[in-house]
Image (cartoon, rainbow, N blue to C red; front, side, top):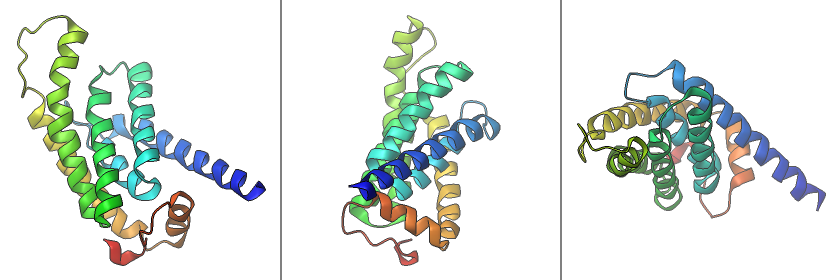
Length: 181
């Protein structure tokens, strides 16, 4: 029983560290209208922690960026769907490139399209907005961020502590060795 409590605490500590990294790094490595660092952290987070914790990380980061940095609800629509699909992609595809593809589709396509109605609600107007308004920027940020995340993961997966942390979050029978890239 104590071992399960210790592992649960370790998971929360890793989740808190990933949230802190995302919240701090996202505004530092931001291109106007794009947040590639969120995609970097989403891809690394879901490979490290799985879809549930990765999505919780993205949701928490989006809320914190909205509260602390004054970013509109785009912080949520852009990150949460990408993290969720990236997590599912990695869990069922068993390869990092499936996580990358999930992040690009979730953030670049789904997140960008859902941003339109959210921003219409948030601003109360449709002036100057259309369904694909956010799509080019979301695709640009998610593609560049996912590729950077992929490159970083190639290096991280060679570090023994990374695999050990993955095992704390492991539920399925996915092997987490370097060959899974």
